[in-house]
Amino acid sequence: MQGAPPLILQLEGVSKVYRSGDFSVTALADVTLNIRGGEIVAIMGPSGSGKTTLLTIAGALLKPTHGHVHICGIEVTNMDESHLASIRRQKVGFVYQSFNLLEALTALENVRVVIQNGSRNGRSDAMERASHLLDTFGLGHRIHSLPKRLSDGEKQRVAIVRALAKDPDLILADEPTANLDAKRGHEVMELLGQKALELHKAVVVVSHDNRVRQFAQRVLWLEDGRLSDHPGG
Image 1 (cartoon, rainbow, N blue to C red):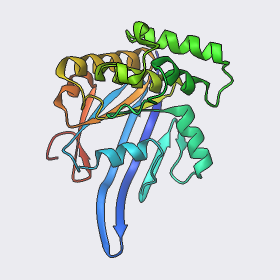
Image 2: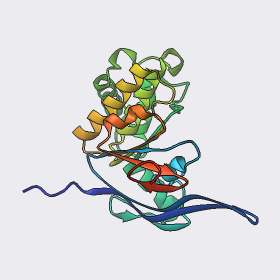
Image 3: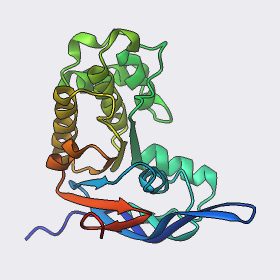
């Protein structure tokens, strides 16, 4: 009998308090979360509920005030920045609502630089892999297009390909449908979900867009920095 997929992301009692002089704001309060490979978890909540803080801590870009963070079984909570950068590069892929594509590079080059950066892949090998990945996302005819020539839906698909290109174990998506109409938002989430399952990635999507719920195995709610299984919990 096959065992459970590996734990990719573990947050244990994570809190984040922002302080400025005598003033403090608790963005996250005692959050515990476990996500396995092949699992898509949607974290819903209103603006200002702590979703982006949670995602930033999960991606080892921000240290929690209290608690522990493990990525692929490695505790990253108190790692120094050079080791954190290595974890982010090897283990984590980010998808942003603003796409964050390099405007001077084609779709192909935007993906190629991620594959080639910090690896032993030669340029031609990286170009071939980038081209193949873009093709699987229905972008084979757009590989030589600059971002300004792409629709928002195409830009988001390029951004997802770029996140998958370095073969990370964990994909973190921040409001990936925010700039998309209903049809494109559905297409992007369907593709992200399909590839995550095929490639056994753990995916966390934070959003206040109810459309993402149908693509998740679990839906959690974050309100006032507290995570629960249902709204108002």
